[in-house]
Length: 157
Image (tube, rainbow, N blue to C red; front, side, top):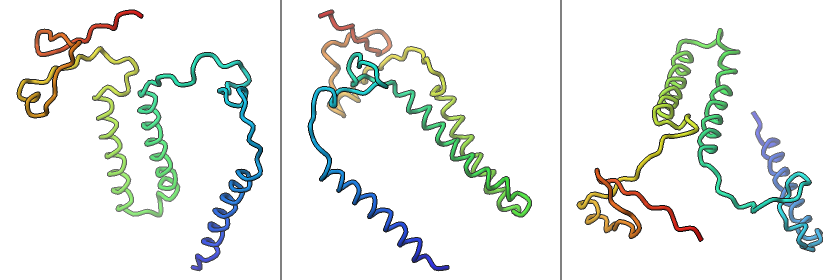
């Protein structure tokens, strides 16, 4: 099979993309003003800062979705050719699904599928750990029973 036309097509595609970016960079007018520099919110006036804290649980859920979306991507061609595939393909897909099932079980047991997690406490380092790592407890931390520490809320400003 001759792959030269495919590589030429890919090379031409990359050249066209970078050439159009370069031409836009050279020819585009640069006149920044407050309207252009403001955050775009679908035609509405921006409210608040665009730099907000984002809950990392969104990333976990999105990553789990992508993993299982890719699983479906592999399952469809396998299901279409199911009759022509041999025992090896069955075993291969069973191992693939088992690995994903173990990952799903791990995420489930860890509690990453729960949106509202129970309050977790931070354990203070044991004296041996503090000496070996050089860690020192925070000045604002107050030790509680059981080696847990609690940081009091900051005073209102």
